[in-house]
Image 1 (spheres, helix red, strand yellow):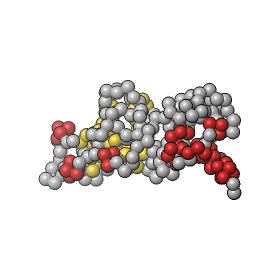
Image 2 (cartoon, rainbow, N blue to C red):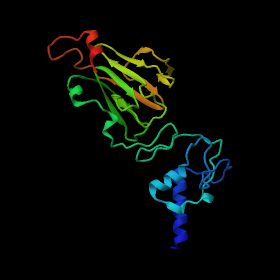
Image 3 (cartoon, one colour):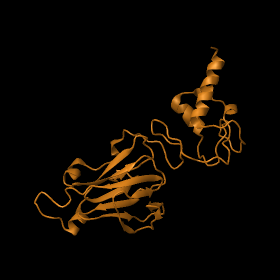
Image 4 (cartoon, rainbow, N blue to C red):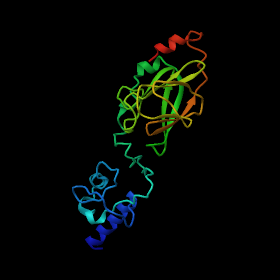
Length: 231
């Protein structure tokens, strides 16, 4: 096989991975001459060639503009990477993703969980503890989705009490939807088991853990104010 043939095969495979159509109308190009989607802020071809080491195999003549009529369904790879512009790449080995300290966890009982599949093809489970659970993309959040650029630094809270759970939206202009209903900023809504929550571009399913909520180590029940103090 000649070097030219090998390059052709690599380019064809690369096009298939990115979902590049056979034809299109070029309206905007990057500095290297790659055709860009109107909604791209950076050239995905340049980023991809740096990531997988295609180098000069992908030329500007090989990249074609996606059709304006094509849907923008995000493509997620086996590694959980997405081409949705609402997401940005991050190191999934970063332990700061859920920075609740061990000492803090030891004082709080398990109360529920949030499950999401947006960036993780196999799914990702975030544990909720009694009291307040801060959700956002900031490093100090209890549940952190750093890759979701449409998520606020401090987007919302889930407060887990003995007999009920609440979803509290914080002061933000970014989207929060509960079971298909958009919630306003700085609002509080009861949260039922199995509720579907969309915050920014991330979609979660809420699961409540009821066992153990009625009892504490002293054998009594917690007061409402005591849950407010838990963090």
